[in-house]
Structure formats: C-alpha cells, structure tokens
Image 1: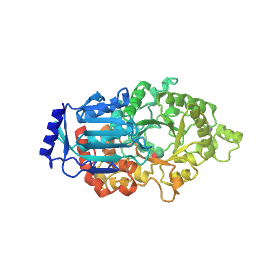
Image 2: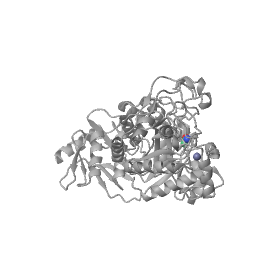
Image 3: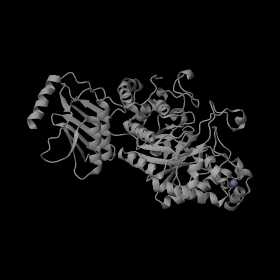
Image 4: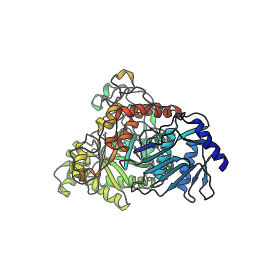
Length: 532
Ligand code: ACM
Ligand code: ZN
C-alpha cells in the first residue's frame, strides 16, 4: 500500500498543471490557501477514508464521503493507510467549523464537531463537481472554514400545495448542499392541513383535502364568485411515521426540522372540521383560493386551547427541535371584536386591545412548550400585543420587527420579504417565468441582504441568529417548479448565511455559480438559468 501511495504521488507530479479543482465553491470557505507548485493528491476510486471508531455520526460522514468521492470507509487505526482521514478535535467554539488539509500525507479533515466534518465533505464534494472519471486530482490546499450564523434556514410551505415525502427529502438534500441547517416546515394553512394528529384522526383526513383550486391570479374571497376553479383535488398529509423519518433524514445532514402550525389565523382548514373553534361557529370549508381569512380561532373559547395543546403535544412528539414555530402572522382580529366569548375573555384578563388576546394565546402556548423543554418562534405580528417572555421573532414584513425584537433582547431570524421570499418573480420579464405571487426578487437582491441592520448596536446585533429564505407555494404546484423558484436564489442566500459580509462579492459569486449549476444538472434539480 505504501508503494502504491508513492506511485500515486509520483504520478501526481506528472499531472501537475492539469488540476481543475480550485475549491471556489458556494458558499465560499473563509480561507482557501492553495500551495503553489501544482502538486496534487490523486484520489482514485476504491481508496479509503478513515473515521474514528465507535462514532456512528462519523461513520455516516464517511459514508457521505463514499457517496460523493468514492472512498471506502474504514475504522481509523495506527496501521491505516487511508488517503483520507476525518476526525474531531478542532479547537473552535463554532461546532460547524472545519479544516481541510491536502498535502503529501493525503486529505485530512478535522471538525470542531461532526457537523463541521459534514460541511468539509460538502466543500470537497462541490469542489470536484467538474471532474470526470475515476481519478480526481486534488491540488494541495489548506482550507479553514466556519459559518457566520448558527441559524441558516429555508422554509417550504407544504400546506398550499402538498409535496410528497420523497420531494421533502430532496429539498433537504438541496439545503445540505448549500450549508443550510434549519428546515422550517410550514405544515398547515387555510388551504390544507398536512400534519397527522392521532388524537384527532378526522383532522388531517378531512382538512388535508380541497376539491379544487382557483385558477390563475388570486382574486380573494370577496371576488370568489367570479373566480374560476380547476377540477383537480389537492390532497395529502404526512403521517407521524413519515415525519419522523424526515426528521431523521434531516438530522443525518445536520439539519433541524422546525415545524410550524400557524395560529390563531391561517386555520380555516382546521375550522372546517371543528367549526365550534371559530368565533361564529361556521360552517367553514377548506379554502380553495388564496389570501387572508377573517375566520381565525376563537380566543375566548377554552376548547381552542385544548385543541392546540393536543396538536402541539403531538407535534413535540414528532419533532425534537428546541424551536417550535407557532406562526402568528396575518390573523385579522375583526371577528374577535364582535365575538361575545372573545370580548368576555378580554374583560376577564383586563385586556384593552384584541392584539393582546393573541399574546394571551402565545403565552399559554409558551408555557405549554416550556414544560416540554421547547421554545416558540413566531412571525413578527407576535410583537403587536407584546411578546411572550422567551419568544423568538421571525421578521418577515421587513427588518423593522426584527430590530424592535432585538432591542427588546429577543432573538430574531431575519427573513424580510424583499430579500428572502423566493416565491416572488426572479426575472423582470414576467412572461419568461411561471406565474408567481408577485414582487421581484432577483438573485442579486438576495445576495445583497445583510441580516444585521446597521441601526442595531453590536450588543443588540447578537440577537440576530441568522437568516432564512421562504418558499410559499400558492403558485408553486410541482416539485420542479419549487426547485426552479429556489435555485439559484438559495445559493445567494447561503453566502448571506455563511460568509462574513466583508468577504462577500457578487461578481465573484457569479463566477463560482456555474460549478454549482453543474451539480444541479447532474442531480436533476430544475433551476432558473437566467441571472439578474
Ligand atoms: C407570511 O409571509 N405571511 C409570514
Ligand atoms: Zn371568539
């Protein structure tokens, strides 16, 4: 084996100057120092990767290396002649940090934790995308890397359109390719309930179905009489076993699944099954059009909290995530203003504004989640009646909510729609792309996002945990269309999430993008080829 390795090293010299690999991947590592001289390590199919014994996560990482690089996992030992070695022990407080050293000793990857090793393998995987054949030439290099933010998110709305389990897994694969570590899963909305609740067996079965969907642009409830609907039922929900499998699949890729059950608004699908939970008692039916419904959960009915606790109890059983998203957005308070139960509740609690009723529900949910060791995230509307004590705010209507929350010393995830809503059009020419909800968010605008607003003090800025892009799916009907909306805007978002702002450079990003697009094509991901 030793002689064989020497042979490869000798061969390496002969290949000097021919290596294509430059390690200029997306997101770009913090430092890439290539050694001058053109030396390379030759990685040949069938060589080994050594991983520390009795570490199942490192074995899994070695298996990822096998999948991407063709190396065979073996337990590390003194005798090991493996060309590639993965280990822990890098001294860096950032668990996602890693180093890659490629020199005459081979390929050495060290992570601050297992996730760091995973990201190192992703970096190598992306670096070699342009290589063909069984031999990969890896130029000598030292790479040091760590992401800027601990929260690097992407959301998928599976309520407006249902996406099959296999696609959800593919979505997770795509996130992993981009160094994203939080998958925010929007599971319920007016147009569909996708989360199986065992204690409420009718819920997903009935509310996961709508007979048809409005065609074309949303005209809203007021014009529904004039709307034209298709005749295609939209149907589906995830069983708890399926969701647990997705959680596990994501965890292997160092991605936490953060589920969202949106309350108290965006609840019409649930109300269609339990009309007594609405202020008027209904009847309600699962929405077949888009927009914001005035019909929300009744805040004065004690059955509402019983219902929510059943749902969230099971949600916590399925999803181990510390953070649970309670939604809280776009919940009109009109019905509460005239509902005797809601008004009586306000009187009982001494509240003067309906917005405070929403805070009351949030506080009840916060208590319930805290008993299970969980914390809540809500959209920035949750600021309006006062935040519950430990709430994290997801700022979507711009930066303002996030700034206000950070100043109140609440944690924040920045996802302002102008920079982060990948359901918006990505090209100026609307006829060059599928129908979308509106807006205009080109790749360059995603790239320009800075999650920590300049008006925050450094101390306040620490409350910004990271950034996220959101894929709402009112107008996104298929997996291919979802990918087209996401890519390559997610690539731009990944540099927002990963890189230091002073290192970001849009022109340079555009030069590095073709290599990543090559991966998209090889993996069969649809993407928008035009860049604006
Ligand atoms: C949202 O876009 N309604 C959070
Ligand atoms: Zn009410």
